[in-house]
Length: 434
Image (cartoon, rainbow, N blue to C red):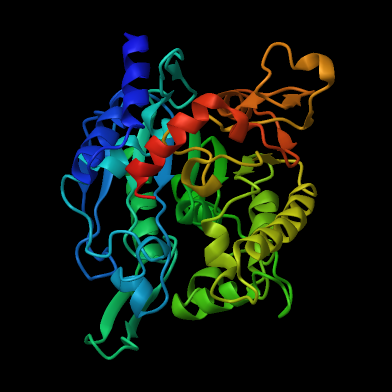
């Protein structure tokens, strides 16, 4: 059976018409991730919650007999002007500008979004599906439709600078939605033992930005936080690389009204202090960041519209500078882990917990091979000379073992030289639309 699936993957790489390719890609990805999840989801609508376009906000709940709860923050861009909030900018705008459908959880994004939601790392041809630590957990799934990383608190009118469209009234109501869902979770899941708050991309940012509020509301016996690829970098002064982005969203989303509620260990003048705040406010919780050094998605939000030059090489250089400072900051806190692989061709090296954990591994000593190491895999010029830690192992150590794990992988070409990745990555990227 698996050999037939592998042949199907190879067949998909042959030239086909656009319409047929779209059907084939989604069909093959369905096989790759074993159909995603088919949970019985309960739709929840609460008074006062809304999407950016003013429609009713909806989140979804999956109930089990577990004492543990996953609070998943969906990603999908950000917005602070007409083009990015209306959907005109496409991938660099806000997700779901037209609101959330009732059947949202059966659609592609939510169905296949993450092994963490699905409770298993997907099986592939010649590679078995593997259960992970969140299998059978209760889930609160937060779709993303406000363009404000689930934490904004403002109503803005954005004008179309081309003059072609009427002004757009946009509701950055992420904070209201998040707090309402957290209070709902407290009422419906009393006595939570382990709470994992996580999210990817914009949802990763909201994981860090909203952790204080979510954790305080639900009040679990033990808290865990994993920010996937939404780092809130240090920006202590006007010359800091991430400061222009922080200033823009602070104004557009009225973040002062939200962050003024945080403890004094956070300073609105440097949003990167959110990391210190969560670490010191919850010293017994396990906190983590994961993401790729070669990210070329979130990094574009951070610098492309604010910095010159803004070509790809420059964006990567800005990101690496900010990331190095970020890691140095996290090293100050005993309860902060990090898991930073170098590169993965899936989704422009953006997000390490989405779709599949293939290529989401990290090695502290990834180095060029010695001459005698080529015999077993002559196509691969890199080798891990410490421990190769897969994402599922990191999660198990972090959540079940309550261990601090710190891996910052050096620059390497390991994933690019992996033959399977060269076939898998285009399929996943096609399904993701990029």
